[in-house]
Amino acid sequence: MSSATDTAETAGTADTPGARSATPAAPSPGADAAQARRGGGEGRIGLRANLRHIGALARRNALQIKQDPESMMDALLMPIIFTLLFVYVFGGAIGGDGGGSRDQYVQYLIPGMMGMMGMSIAMAVGTGINEDFRKGVMDRFRAMPISRSSVLVAKSVVEVGRMLVAIVVLLIVGFLVGFDVNGHWLGMLASIGLTALFGASLLWIFILLGLTMRTAQAVQGVSFIVLMPLQFGSSVFVPTDTMPGWLEAFTHVNPLTHVADSARGLMLGEGAVAGPVMWTVVWAVGLTLVTAPMAISMFRKKT
Amino acid sequence: MTRQKTTANAVEVRGLVKHFGETRAVDGIDLDVREGTVMGVLGPNGAGKTTLVRILSTLLQPDAGQATVAGYDVVRQPRELRRTIGLTGQYASVDEKLSGWENLYMIGRLLDLPRLQSRRRADEMLERFSLTEAARRPVSKYSGGMRRRLDLAASMIGRPRVLYLDEPTTGLDPRTRNEVWDEVQNIVADGNTVLLTTQYMEEAERLASELTVIDRGKIIAEGRVPELKAKVGGRTLEIRPQRAAELHQLVGALAQAGLDGVGGATASEETGVVSVPIVSDEQLTAVVGLLGERGFGIADIATHLPSLDEVFLALTGQKATHEDETAYVDEKEEVAA
Image 1 (cartoon, chains in turn yellow, blue):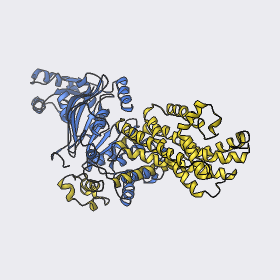
Image 2 (spheres, rainbow over the protein chains, first blue to last red):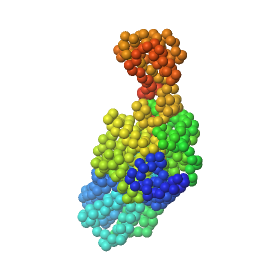
Image 3 (cartoon, rainbow over the protein chains, first blue to last red):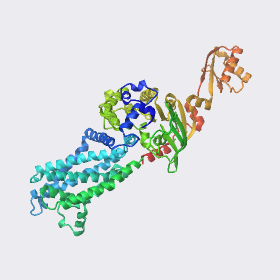
């Protein structure tokens, strides 16, 4: 708590309009005490206060999207374009596991691309954070009695929402071009959840990049260079057994392969499930444990 | 944690130092801001004003010295300190994509006001800063003056004990500047403690009760506004004789009398006024007495304090608005990095 005078004031009177002009000599006591109580007293920010702050900041990020609907274009168009591109341009030629039919390739491609959606959406957060950081409003947040990590957590909450939108669009387009989960609806839900978990862990890497690089363009450039080999050096688009040994070895450690394989296992009921799911979770948790604290501490230090 | 001591000083700064590489942006500053007063920190670009404010708002760590705000240490008690301050920066620190109302509501929620109170407070502040009509429009569509007003409103949501105004009118046109000044004067009239940085003499003179003049990170003068002016230049006594023909006789009489400490009088035929530099009230009395004795008729008599521009020139030996752009850019870059 602050001081004796602060606690003596009742919070109620201080918040009625006009109360401030009635007590011109004492700038803030009532609100101060009320804030101190609700915020958990001695400057420490309690869990509930933290969740409230994250909520208020997430609302900000969501309103930004509403104000600037073009920023949702990637989540809406990317799944459509990639699906159409791969199914109709490459689909017939690549074929499925066994027979070269386009329908079989759809079954292979759609689950595979879920993780890729997560990764592509995550990439955008880096540029967003980088731009956001250059604005005066960050100074305001950083000079306010809120946990600094809540700014980043709120951003990732909204970004996971964007990922879910992209994944849902992907599935809808998939169904339209003939994708069929054969009744594995629960598997599909599990797979969506798993992909979001993986995507959320990737967010921290790109947040870290966004905080490190000087310009938004640089962030985009670096992200792209990292992204391309990961996306294509995996089982996202094609089975890996035709690749040369060294590349196939790379695909086995590439987390996107695990995400893609786990989605296939869960949604199609084909192939191994436990292994890929386990590796996806290991990757997601591992990445988050390493990069989230790094990103938060970098954000704290950044002045 | 309890406040360390009950003090009449809302802000106390002792020996504060901050380097950016080779530049000593803040170089041993001592500063006291008494509760309920407005302290003006006056200085040219790159003097270290923004660095000082950023340290006092916990955005920068000092390299040496200490500072407390409302009794809370900037380094050891940043969380507590942040509850007591409001910050309005050089660049409006509000979210451009959100509406004015959404900005204020968000700040209320971040300050742990319940939803209903946050809503009320947002409405109340928009009303107070004459932004009610623009409440639902995105801030990107606001004029410069409206943005600064919203920024002030955002800083006042939490009823801060100490409000920092870092160059609140830099870059505004004169009419908008007056708008913002009016709002700041209202805030001041409510008894808030304000630390105001500015490079405009007019602004400091109009809003601040006490002044600290800084240059290159060091304090070069401080005191109440009239004291500071008197300290530097003394006053000028201007006498208009009833009969313009007596202008030079009057100068002659003053020179002849040789009053102690009274400087050389000068006459201007254009304005019909004799100017006499004086330092004390006694000298003023002596001059007026002498004129009465000699039978000069006086039409008008007035004393003038030097302007703050003149004060600054006298203190630093250079023009107040000097073009120290490089230093300014350095500071800004360090701040951004």
